[in-house]
Length: 184
Image 1 (tube, rainbow, N blue to C red):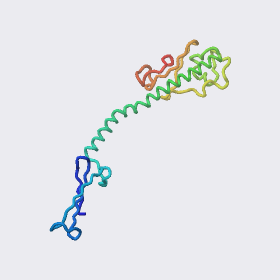
Image 2: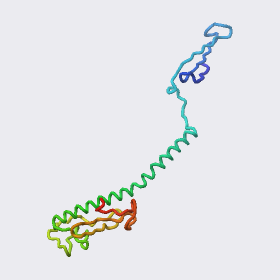
Image 3: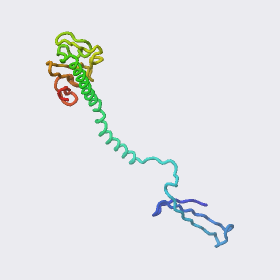
Image 4: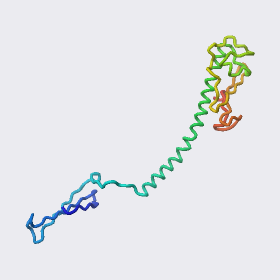
């Protein structure tokens, strides 16, 4: 076998093997006989060894990754802020439940002066907590996700629990907005 010349055919890869048969093997003609055998093979079966990527392929991948990064990264970055807002809402609901349990036991909410500490230890002052639960209503006074205490207001009939949000100032928008029980 002298050589194999791969070339593209209409139906995929075609391998042409050129075999020379000399006079010693076959006695046809004065200088020998040449036999050409054509075989079709799959491109998947043909092994060319290690193959790299072209510059265009690498650039296309980099552009695609850049586009995905531009779309996904801002979404991921805002997630911690959303999680803090959600955690604050959940804590406010939990405080509301504790305040309702306090009212069931004592027939009134703690006053604004008694504050949320009335849920952790027996309050002093008016209104008196006649049937305060010895186990308390909360294990500790909660703080918001921005490490500030929750604010509490009561007029003995209604309550308001709130936090000022990420900016720690009254008002604000989006993640800086106040989170109030009355708005949940």
